[in-house]
Image (cartoon, rainbow, N blue to C red; front, top):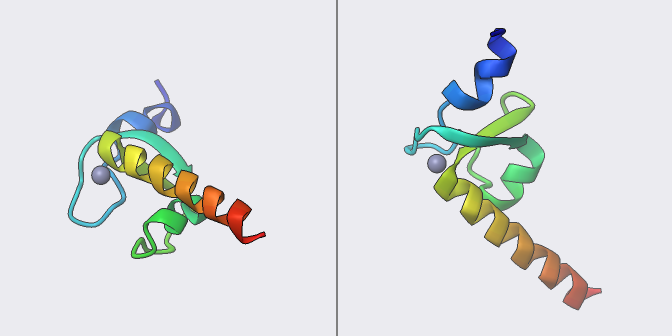
Length: 70
Ligand SMILES: [Zn+2]
């Protein structure tokens, strides 16, 4: 196994104070739409199950608002 294959399993959640095991690695700019407190360090941000759910919910609402706004 190469280190790059192991990243998603071993990297802790990027949200401060969480540190749970990540289930998804997302583009950091996308994650920052839902979690603006996230640092801009790095290109990708791993999220744990709970924060991934919150991210999905938050971005879904943002997209719905965009549609209403335009
Ligand atoms: Zn988390």
